[in-house]
Image (cartoon, rainbow, N blue to C red):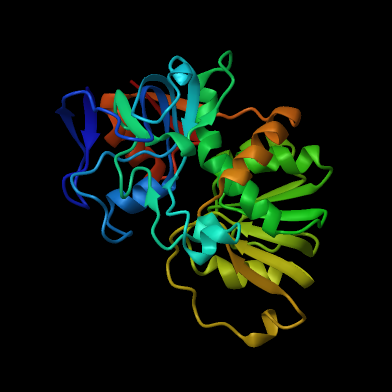
Length: 327
């Protein structure tokens, strides 16, 4: 197999030939068809998330065909298309796992962070954390749903039922969840990097009622806002943008420091909440909704060997939608 490997945070990925992995008990092996590139991959590669497995194969939005199974896994799964997300394994015994909050597991494994991921021709995954996917769909189009879609859905679920939804950082997750919002009959207000007219036109083309820079105030008070960009100063900006009793959801796994802010912008029973990881139930709920809503992911495909270029384009904000590696 060929894999793009992170040997040390802050360095470029290196193409490495390895023996094909062998799935262990309860595991499957996938022939990777596509793996989307997530901002969390940037946080891992750039050293903003501590203690990754090293050397590491990043990538946690994997679509592939099962070509081998380990002991204890039904061999009938061989040949099926599955998706593997960020949450790669949970202990099943801690208080969080026992209380339907496996996303907060005390001893988890994360795909492309604490276990090897999908920037490769083959990947091994826990069979219990691999979701069956439509065998007739385009694997490149499916890949961003495995994290951008799932985390976006979990963030939207935390945002409540309000009609006016602000999305800060109009990238992979926002462009997916905006389509879900519109299907639900909500109004989407898109906030991009200041002066990024292309991203604003992209948002308006998807159906947003307004698009502007993250330094701008929306034309009306929002019911809720979701922050996908990892930028701490957006928190007070979003709190100022929502009405009393409005909700601000931080949708990323990493964010720069939140600056000191006046209590007055939180007062009025506004809520500030975070989203951590995902659960398998999120996938069971989201995938049918994405299909019903007719979600279409906007993707830019890169060959596997161009993983560093895909990461650089994401880092520089040169993408609308999602980057996807195709072995």
